[in-house]
Image 1: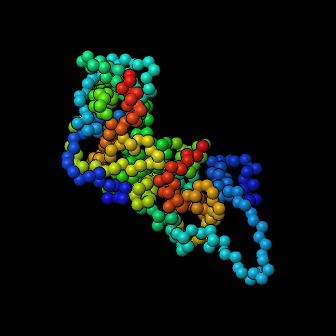
Image 2: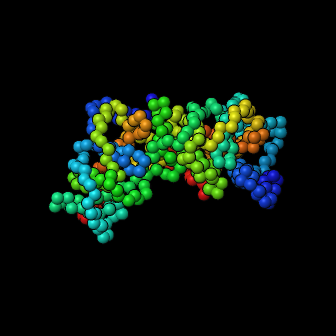
Image 3: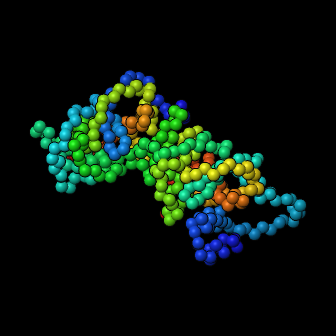
Length: 207
Length: 159
């Protein structure tokens, strides 16, 4: 919490720092601290390790993580949950009466992929690039080719283990944000949760 | 085929009149289309619903013209030489829809028509019959009888 407090009091010199503060604030959702009193006679029972208790199943073993950027924000996504990465020139069929975050349909390998303006969902409005339909971007295909997430740049693929990530605990909102990669200082998506959220009626465009 | 692509049915060939609105191509069943006309004077109707552009005189008959752009969430566009009114019969009403241009009549095999995947509580899903994948784009197939709700069809009848 001390680093968060220092960021909150220091002037935000650029958007990268502001976004880091934003993600830090997401990761430090109010967590009710429960004072535990060990019952007599149970002092030798070891508590579960913090990693084992917070780490999702897909990160129990070392995994490859794709790092990509959306505007000024870097995000990671486990490679095993991805079904493709495409160059994208902005070609999409806009469906009538769509919500603003849904850009439309694109055919890919015989499937109609729903293209999502990821920036509207994960980046607060004041930090957006506003280039959702511009050219030279990329699509990250997820969920059996049901969804394509628009991103600006594909940065690299890095090997990670559960210990490399500060996992969110007691996440009551935005369950699609699994945690933060400590070395890369970027948010890591829980792709399955992100797809679940897209399928539901609960997509919220960030103000 | 992905799991989100399902065939509506494997029955016959159907014919569709295609038209453009903005950048996208749409199709409506040829059986629902009575004729396509150039844009005459459209007289606004005071107090009419927002989805009604006005009325036209079609050889002595009054036809209500729907603002399909508004229904589809598109920006307004000035009519030009290519603009047409497609006269359709749906829900026992004859109405017109203003479109940017009318392209052609295409024949589609039912097995090639795919259900358009829903997004959230997408209101459009009720009137999108499906999509057809063409070489360079998708054709969005519209069921005009579902463009309006039952109450709205009644409102149109009362104009």
